[in-house]
Length: 293
Picture 1: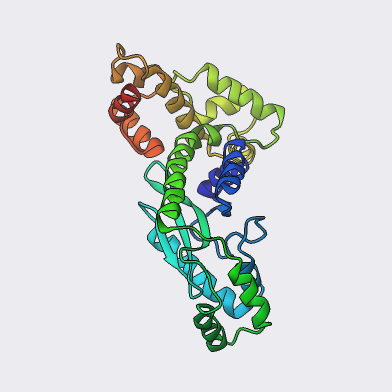
Picture 2: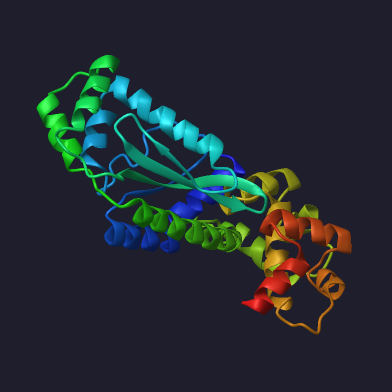
């Protein structure tokens, strides 16, 4: 599991995401999945809000391939804004990018919804497409499942997708704290290492300094810290410093250069670069947004 996948996995198991997923499903009747951009499996599988027709399609290899193509299209196009695609059965799916800094690390995906009321007459085109793809199965059962598809007006569905866009922004803002607070159980040596880092955060601390403080070799400490903290040492320290900087930026009387040195950066340029990489905006932009909010 790479760094981005680790953060996304932490998000997916957070109370923030689980609570929103539950509320979104109860309010809209739609499924919601948080997934990596390159995930190669049918979206919404096993979701309690999964469209019954889509559940039957997912069990067939031929129709499953068609569903995966829609998912791939969404992942490729939803890089900077929400994207909606329509499948062969006339059902809409949407993906909303979730970003950490300037990187898309995943998508909030929902859909399997009909934007026109399903009818027996309109199932004729779906039936023809199923026959064309050679999808096996009882057509009467498939028709009944398709007719039970959740239905929304286009405006209602756009509103649901907009809600996800706002939630994606909230998830992105919380990602830094989530990355720092990895839920993994950790040995006492890593707990002591984190305490040492917190105490010396404003200093020019190195991996070697911390390894020595907890009586571990550099090599073993580096490997162990990455395993249990879920982040490389330098990234963990950077994220911790940025969190502290965010608090200090709330004070309008502190200059950004003062804040940079206060949280342990040795140059303003480095501080600005790391801040933008992690949060996707400069310290000045962040301060302005907080002030307006």
